[in-house]
Image 1 (cartoon, rainbow over the protein chains, first blue to last red):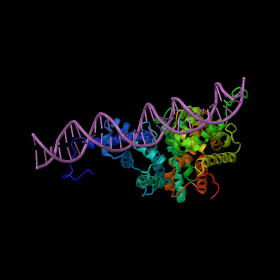
Image 2: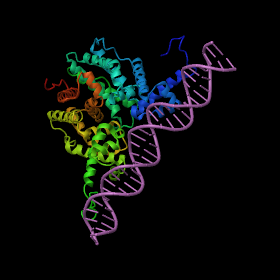
Image 3: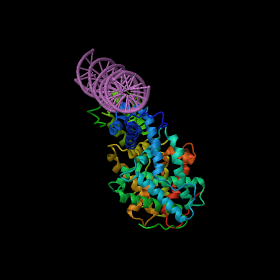
Image 4: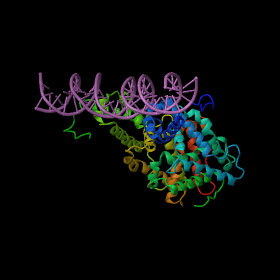
Length: 224
Length: 224
DNA sequence: CGTCCGTTCCAACGCGTGTTTGAACTCGGC
DNA sequence: GCCGAGTTCAAACACGCGTTGGAACGGACG
């Protein structure tokens, strides 16, 4: 697609614009309501496009979803780059900085009131997988997970591979829980919403909690 | 309901049995597929009951769901009692035992291949709340959360209330993540399913990770 | 100008959903 | 032995969903 410049330039006017508007609308709708509850009609209304036209560009709802998913993960990788997994952190301080950067990245894209739709959609695909999960787990998820593992390994050099993986899941799980069980967590904390101060508090806590769990001996946590 | 013995005993035969079978079937279906995706027809087929009969006993799908939810939480509290939140743990060893018991309880009811439908339904109501959430958060969720807080406080006596609450959420979140993001976590761990050995490994890790994060100074973890 | 083809729209279809209708059935009470 | 309330059932209803048919629009090309 996107055609050779000479032969297939048959876009009368706003055809590619329609496609783009549909993708953007579908991203929002699917991120907010999931694949099943997100309806074609809602997407088309938001995009200002007729339903038949949507089915002309993407041949079905499933294909539209897969296109959105690919787009979302690509943008996620482009806009929120993680510290490279291949280069191990040199010092313990660098490892701590990487851990904080990872936690901050996840928290700000998932918890903040203006959470990134790409991140929400990605999380939804992990918690309620569709057939499209296989397409993205190796390309998009695993590299980011390995980056977290690298940070963990920097903090806990002696740990086995399985321990490192478990620990990385623990770090991610602590943050993600505030999104997946958000309404309940808010009430248990006595808070109203995940505003910036609360998000910062969550990040500080998860970083401190995880550092104490990972660093050998008695670890000093930073400020507050 | 269940009537005064003299006046309203108008149950010709298996009316209460039908009610009970519907509740049991709805528990399974709703736990497996959620409120929206769990259909009345599937519930009725499983219960061997006509749809109109189901709508006679519970007047709508929503009311059936709320009835199931109340039943599930009541049974959860009855069958999986947590260490009492009111009595603080006396010794550090008792606090550690409580922490392990809490983690084991959550893990075995959520992760094991024959996970308890009550627990799955409860988790689903927390991650995808319906209007029924308000009815249960104070009666059923908060007491269990306070029990976890008590265990955390026993391990970290000096911590502030907010710190304790955050830490309790961290403990829960680590375990719950393996359920909510189960398929992805399995692939990242290189495992096939959450069999008993893997569940035990998760419990051991989460307990060790959390104890290191909570206990002051250099903590010795148990086995392995 | 006439033709073609990519694109958009209105209207409808087929399906699955939750719910209702109205008749049949089952008993305890008179 | 019949009445009537409680209960069950097959069939249908109204609605929303994803999807499709077919006509109308609009530039590109001959």
